[in-house]
Length: 115
Image (cartoon, rainbow, N blue to C red; front, side, top):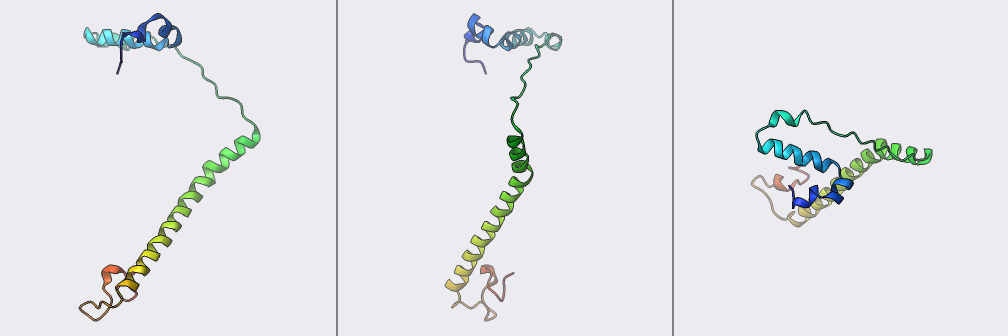
């Protein structure tokens, strides 16, 4: 999506030289010259990463290999705890209700009919 024609104006072309290739590719496409789009060379920009210290590298490595799985396991345990508390609360609330067989209804996960 292009907002206006200033994307090919002088200051923008100096800051973003890829805009020229975008404009020329759009003109080629509009004039049904699609085979010419692939011929136009693209400038290769080198964007090296900043060099970080060994401590930072170790912390990123730890967070990506162990931190995320630990967070997922913790989330699962918290969810299980919350669901079991909710289930116990429902059983306690409806414990006076007997199902057709005289036992706690299996739909609420009571001790007789639940998991």
